[in-house]
Length: 122
Image 1 (cartoon, rainbow, N blue to C red):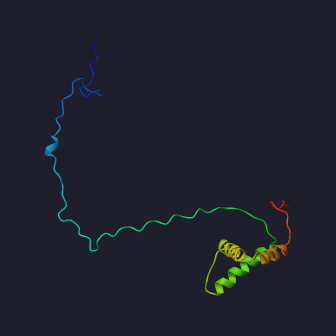
Image 2: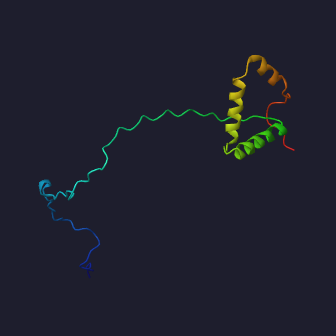
Image 3: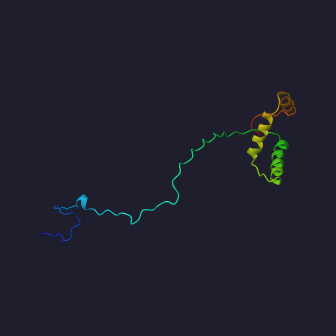
């Protein structure tokens, strides 16, 4: 007794029929109906400014002086010039840099000396 396989097999047939491809020249090329004309002539792009490299740092200061940053930010806001904390600190550096050496020495001598580093966790 022989068992016949069904007529529809799941295996691919051993002989394949070749598929002809259309020649490359016969492909249809689609061209736009109208070319878009720009209203303004293309101007040369201005050179991009080089971005200033920023540095991230941390520091320690007494709480009273840290609160001064918020007071200065509030005063600037009331003057119509909102600022960020980093802008307040940068403005302070600019003001210190504009001082004479004698003025700078007096200002720095008036600062309270604090321990550097992170405060201990409580």
